Image (cartoon, rainbow, N blue to C red; front, side, top):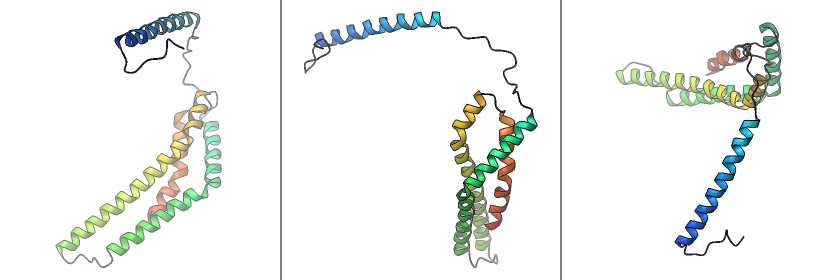
Length: 173
């Protein structure tokens, strides 16, 4: 323990001691890592690494069921999406209530409201999907590593289940 203690202010002697200890530890670790690397062997990959055991239909069915169950268990996600669109719609309505398009300035205002409505609709659905993917990422990676399903059935199932919400939520806006 005495070797590890330094006196302050540090001297060149302390710096040499620390550097010496670091080099000894590095040499020790390097030898240990090289020894473990020689003992460790990785099995060869088979050429069939991307094939899943289940057919596309079975993967689709299982993912469909799981996504429907998740949607039923988390109804607040759907409620939040519709609530967000209602709020944004009421906000846009209050800001552009009596813009009728009779003047060039009104035309610019209507173009602005259309831009904001489209941006809000896109960003709302984009961030909702992003959050769902982040929540399910650990499960997806674990099941993907176990070759339970492929990426294509997972992505297609998510998109098909999300479509009703992505279509009807902007209509509320």
